Length: 114
Image (tube, rainbow, N blue to C red; front, top):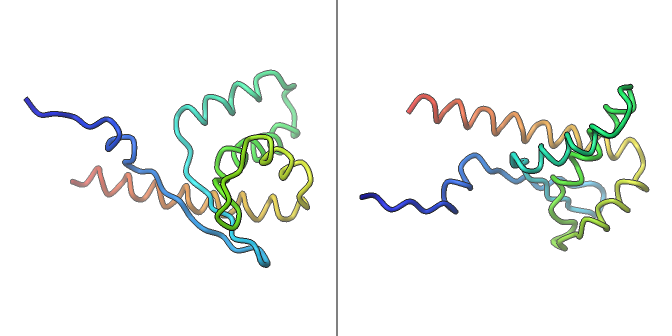
């Protein structure tokens, strides 16, 4: 019988990316299924509107941002950051997250070919 290391399979497809903004290095990560479930739950209490696009972006970044300049952030620190960053910086970070997400999708396509 083959022994399975669950921790190893959880790493399949998981990616991180460091993004520089001025003097700051922000580390982003791809999202887990649990992260996406939490995002959808957070949005399910909101009214359907264009506001959901903005809220979705914030919820993704809250879970995707790992650290700034190597310092791990708490959920409270991430929320404070997202509440107070300039909107254009939020858009920039989200676009970088989308690039990371596309890299992950390409990686998964490579797995399918094996």
